[in-house]
Length: 422
Image 1 (tube, rainbow, N blue to C red):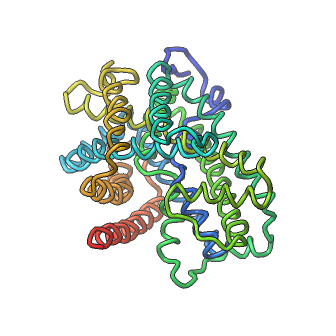
Image 2 (spheres, rainbow, N blue to C red; image 1 turned 45 degrees about the horizontal axis):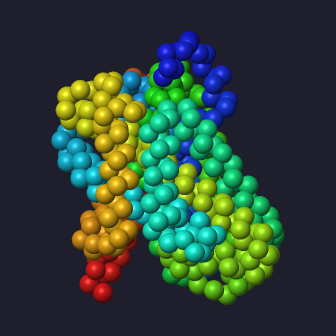
């Protein structure tokens, strides 16, 4: 018997059957940028990089399971775990979460506004972006986790039905699709392969899983099996979603013979292609799915990363993770929620200063290697009871994951530097 966040007693294995935090973290991690990169890779290389998506899903399952296992086994938050490794995680995480929120807030609002602006061409994009940010603020500010989780489930259902439906309509060649499960590296595909394997499914939002476990009421080792099922099934759903986008890129986009823009506007280009090929109804349905994917990421960050900041600042101030100021709807949570919403609106007006973009890119590229590397000591020492420590094969996957993310970080940093000098 356990107690949930509201103090109600429950048996493990009952409440999880509705919706779990895994679906929330997976939905939050897949946004417009992931959709575009997947479409572009599919259009350029056909189905040959399908195997990289499968590898990426497996790695994210291992990372998120590791973060969740640490929280359940130790009874501590992930930030408390990082603090046991010394001061360096704090010195990295503090500027990262502040700068990341400032830049991401503007990006999320614009991305969510794009499909609405396409449906309402007479309304200014920035106005819609501000409204999207304010709606996200209201939904998270005035609701507890349980309501937020249900809203996310509805958005996931919409995006899943739309994208899988598009993949079915695209009618891929099944033998060619299955051949993509054989690992191959076409010419000039290294960066795209790394992006497919390491870039799909979120960065900082992966760590939010442990905080959503607490809010769900899954707070002890008794929930370990439920957590693992929840996490695995959520990323299976994510994998199906991403593969569906990949199929659309390898068929619809490739057949149209166009090169999609590398940013979120590439999804608007796809809308035009879908309208030309299948009619306005399909085009509008895609815009609705585009909005669902973007808005689920927005509110997921507004809630999950605000929980992370509240725990971080509460620990720095010596209040600990269970103090009311350090929890959902506490003072620190609401401060960061406001930080995500209002200061980024300035960037909608002035654009993104190059120095901030560079710093954001550098810190962002280093986050996944940071997570993979820090999980190794957290899950292999007496920081968790012996029965919950890593098995050897999990260590192999974590090391391989860390190496992959380091390679991806090097590519990203090189791209940032070359872009700056260009």
